[in-house]
Length: 142
Image (cartoon, rainbow, N blue to C red; front, side, top):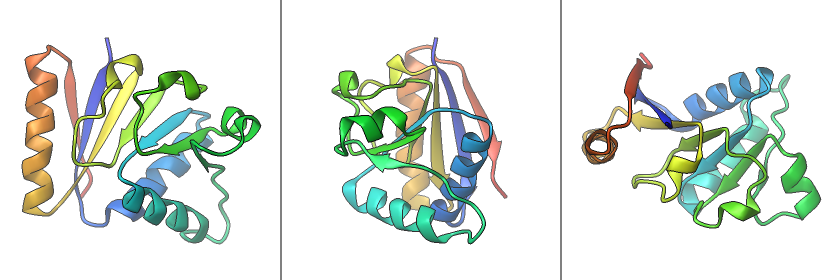
């Protein structure tokens, strides 16, 4: 069964996601990041600029097949067509909605900001997972 973890109260979601992806990459985890096109663009730019000494290889899901297959981190606005994704180890959801197809992943990480609106939307996602019997854990960012 898919493990669900909520990372709570990230005051800068992009910075936190960069640090989380750096850690995932260093531990050789394979991650798919799901979010809106706007958030994915912000994350892509942040991954290139957040550290002068770290390189975190990533690509967008519509890149060339060879690049997608070789990338440990894939950015995508939806995961409904899972056959295009070469791995299903970790799903990092930075969006506001449930990622359709999440149950195909070993693990789902939901990053929740410290704003009330983000918390309210996260509660809906929590309820969704809980009603389906998924084990949920939390990690306090602060």
